[in-house]
Image (cartoon, rainbow over all chains, first blue to last red; front, side):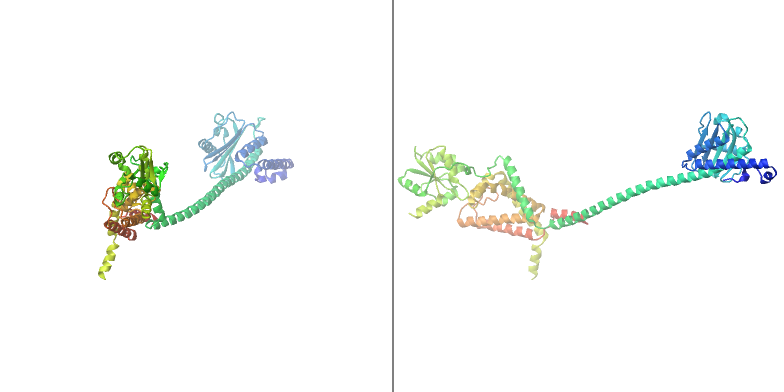
Amino acid sequence: MIAAGDIGLSVEKTAVFPEERDKLVFQQMYYLKTLYELTAELSPITSSQKLLESFLLMIMGVNGSAQAMLMICDRRNQQVMSANRGARFDMDWTVESAEKYLYRGFQTAENRRLAPMSVTFIGDPHQVFPELETGLDVDIALLFMMDDSLLGVVGLGAAIDGREYKLEEKDILSGLTANFMVFLKNVRAYETVQALNDDLFRTNDALRQTIVDLTDARQQIRLLEVAGIRLKELFHQKIEQVGRFRATDVLLFLVVSTLLSLLFNFSNPNGIALLPEDTFREPAPQVDARSVRQLLDRGNIVLVDARPAELFNLGHIPNAVNIPAPLFDIIYSMKLAPRLQLGQLVVVYGRTFSKRYDEEVAYRLLQRHDDVKVMTGGMAAWEKQESGR
Amino acid sequence: MNAVVWIKKATAHPFLGLVFRIYIGAIFITASMYKINYPGEFAETIASYQIVPFWGVHLMALIMPWTELICGLMLVLGLRTRAAAVLTGSMLVVFCVAIVITLARGIPIGCGCFTSIEDPLTWKTLLRDLLWLAMTVQVLWFPSALQLEDWLLLSLKEVDG
């Protein structure tokens, strides 16, 4: 705010001339009213740029100017803010151009060493701000400095009615500018706080997200740790088991052996059926040992021992012909065929616990003769029957 | 006293285990080869013992040679040695029992251990199988050297830290 003395009239003068006193009072009232309006206008504004625009309109209205410009150069942040009204073109302000005009302004300024939050008028505004460069014909201009890095210029074009600006109007402009600096300082502080707040919110959000991520990560780490411990225990357990005997290994060997044997047997040209062929074959007609003895006594039958030679040699029914299945064709043609008469009964025996030799040979004989029978009970039944006689 | 200790030490020596392991393994691998290729002939041999029921003869003729081969390979390599030794020993026990029964019955059949045509079973055959059984028991009971499983275990222990 500025004092009453700043508007250029002394108290002593008002005491001598009552008209002057009235005029002074009126001017002071006008000045206070203007200050009040300025305060009311600028107080709610929270944006620097809007503040510039509003202030420019305000001073144009107060001074009755058709053109005005306002430029502020922020040296620290290397930024320029500007506003203008009534100019023929919008000047494209840069830090360099702003510095150039500030330098020119200070060359002709009334006070070349400005203190912070103070203003000074430029001596020759027409020369400092040529119309060709700025787009407006500046009649009065003043420099203001908020601090070492924040300087600005306010310029007014000619009054609408073409009059010369009075000293009082210059004083009001100076006072309003000083107040504007206070508002601008506040707004910039507000903007800084706002920016800091925004930054803080963003940081908070990032922090919150980081905390969430960290919590998740900690949970995952805990799970991984538990899994790691479990795996290590399992691993350790397996290591302990490596050298030991396990029944499952034996079972595994047997399963693998079975699978491999079945697979190989399937493709082996010498492969065999899983069960003996005679398991599913219709059995040959049977005759018991007692009947065989009777038939033998009548001399009407041929006995065939189907067992291997080594078993035959251990003991056999008298007059039986030994024809093991693997040698059937040769022995049949050599020994049996010459002996057989048409319609003669052939009795085959030689079943053991592990193999039905008799069924195998009987099956082959039945392909050549009609009357072929198998003696039930094999050699054991015969011996029993013979011992019971 | 010293001789007893020496015998105990020698019996438990890992290199003796290694020799027995490879010997028994090689015998079983060799024995399995012919049987695997000619299961029909092996089935005849099994049937001649008259111990296995007729419906199980073919299955035994198919599976047993492969079991012999796998056990033999495992013994030679030194993988799951104890399980292989248990299975090998069990087979040898079955063979011994079968030989005793057959000799007691007086059935003059070949052993069928390696091929289908062999000299008839004698008590020497039983003695041979018992010797093999003793070797297998040594492999089962005592550790043997140069086992593939030991080498793998060493790597696993390094990983375990």
